[in-house]
Image (cartoon, rainbow, N blue to C red; front, side, top):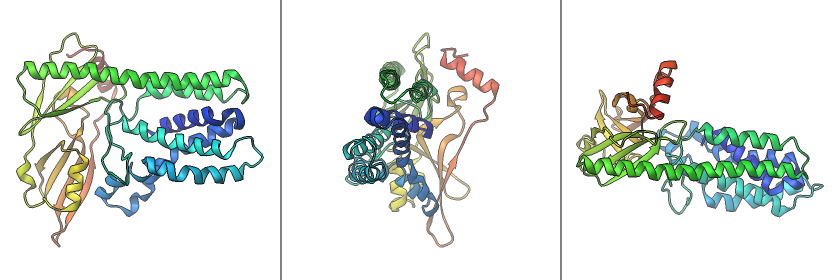
Length: 339
């Protein structure tokens, strides 16, 4: 999730653990705990494109990291605030829950989180919430901020904080229900249109959990469609993208290429470039795919051989031109208007 959301979640967890003993210090250190896992991006200047993809959401997002680092930070903060009521256990639990809730929340998004590093580098992803969702963050933020204005021993302070946690949790649960409903629609329409598939990924489109996208894998490529829970019917139009696996010939076997393909979980298509090839990560889809059925994929990786015959990798991020007309059309589609 985005940084603000993780700060809010960390602050709420810190308050729940030690707010009665630490007051706003619990909010502050909870927010810091919720931020620490994402500091792995500070290593980016020393990593190439594939190494960045592999390293982000790995070590600092793992349960192993939480178990190992939380007691160390708990001991340090206990010494720093030795005159406060909070115990070593309180500080350790604050950091442990701050780290683990951050990692688990990230695993709800599309990217994938290596929760079980170093035992596995598989990116756990449930695909039930977009990385930025104001309906999750804004109400949560309001309750946490409001709680900060009450005395640390106030029952209203605890009530506000727990209400924020309850509402945000309920929204996550709703996203799973919405995903299940969308999956039913996708499966029904794929069967009705006699589209054979071996697996599929469904995920919410940006900023909401009402409008969903699906990418279904078939023998030779992928079908992509969109469905809103507010649509009046389950008639879904699918666009097909051939995998073009043959374009990988001459590149396979390289460790970084194989790692890149593994990161996509097999949801990729290949396109020939002027120099080398493009690998399109289908998990994130096309921002304007719902509107035109075409357009650039959000994440594309350019792979080519340099003059020394070595493979080079470059990440290409594509973003749509967003204006008032785009936002209006997008909102209309979320509300079930297919025109």
